Image 1: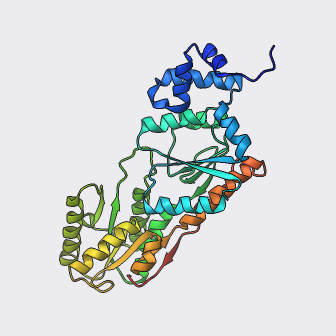
Image 2: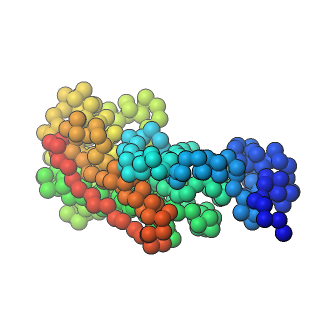
Image 3: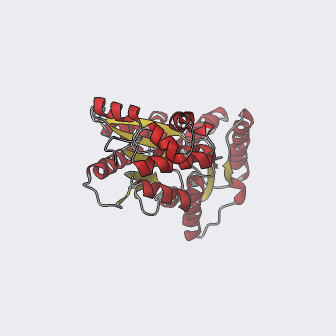
Amino acid sequence: MSSRPPTIYDVAQLAGVSISTISRVLNSPSRVRKDTRQRVILAMDELHFIPKAEAVARARKHLYRIGVLTPFLTEASFVQRIRGISDFLGPSEFELIIYTVKSPEQLNEYLDLFLIPGRLDGLIVLSILLNPTDRQRLVKTGLPTVFVEAGSEGFSAVVIDNERGGWLAADYLLTKGYLNGAFLGERSSLAFTLAATEQRLEGFRRRYLEAGIELNPQWIRIIELSTPRDYGWIDQWLRDFVDQSTGSRGLFLASDLLGAMVLQQARRLGLSVPGDLGVLGFDNLDMAEYLGLSTIDQELEASGRLAAELVQKKIRGTQEPVHRVFLNLSVIDRGSV
């Protein structure tokens, strides 16, 4: 048996495809049928084939390649998490590669890419839920993987208890005397992402019920913000909440971005915050401090740093197979409640 390393020709022969198909799997996997793509990947795995470009790059740079799988790249909370990852993984030893997922099909294509030997040394998954089949595929790769926000069975994770965050928000508003609570959140259009908004609402609602208060369904909204009309709807909803409700009014937003929007519209309507309305966000984005927005701090950058540390230890073999870290959530009061 030859001791030479396997070549792309060996992979093509074993998979029963052409050389050009192998090239497309390596460079443009979306152009290859899923069954063909997976047959090629199985052949690569069986032959222990490492694409030449990957091997050359590794030898030249001496870098570990860390992939970050994220459903959103430009949203501020994900930017801060990725910043935490980048700050921990210094550029002299680690190369960060961002994979933005916009559809279930693209998620499957990326998972196929990760099955190619030598493609990555580690993976961090942000707020994405994998089905049992995809989890098992990822387990079989042996790729050091850490999940953030959503835990996944069999993997290490940095976990955020979103329901606990909603409970804390309601508890703080009640402590401040806001007996009339409202909730506004944004629904994700991506089915494979964590339902963080719904979890925060569940905790928020539960704490008010514990205080003997059932929230008015009229003031509970989860919406999709996609057109200017959506923003106008928030303006009217906020006006109605102040005009039609009585007593002290506390509004919990499922994100600081929504909180910033509500602060702006409250000013436009001539409402005092606090006074006419208490406003509490979620995330503790950089902007929240500048806006004076009270919020639930979920330690975004710390979650990124912790995930990076866990994946680094896994690569070096100094971390137990499954390790979970639960982040602390706390209220930051900046005067808007």
